[in-house]
Image 1 (cartoon, rainbow, N blue to C red):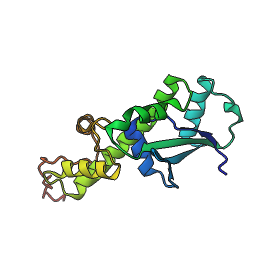
Image 2 (cartoon, rainbow, N blue to C red):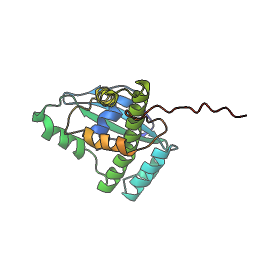
Image 3 (cartoon, rainbow, N blue to C red):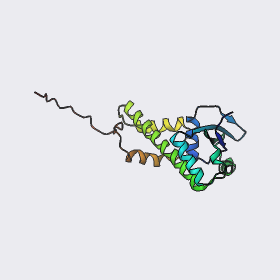
Image 4 (cartoon, helix red, strand yellow):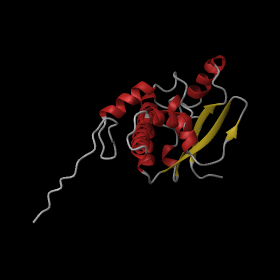
Length: 188
């Protein structure tokens, strides 16, 4: 038995739920409607400290009795059929009773991780392709394939394309950048 305090079906945004589901190593629990994985958050980690602080502010019951950490349940629907949207939404958001602001801030914490991972993935892919044309689109498609993010209602690629374009990083290579020419001047 896990010693973490279990919190059922945390209300992650759909794209974060899929990202976390495919990122977490562990056993998959399945029902007829959905698949679940558990995200164990250690209290000594920065995430655990932030989550505990947020739960204290939200007056979550017995939060002081938690000694090891939290176990957030990440739920991903089995079917992405529109017929099940109403059911999936009520199951995803109705199973936990925490402050709305608290849930929003925890989502923001994991959204920042998602963006960092997206940026690093795309930069690495483009650098590996030596900045060839079309490598950004291939990187985006590969990322969406790995994390099952092809549903436009859950994941808006345009928002993350703009995010990638606005960010700067030493790993980021521009597709249209000219190669840097080394000075052939020798120091004497």
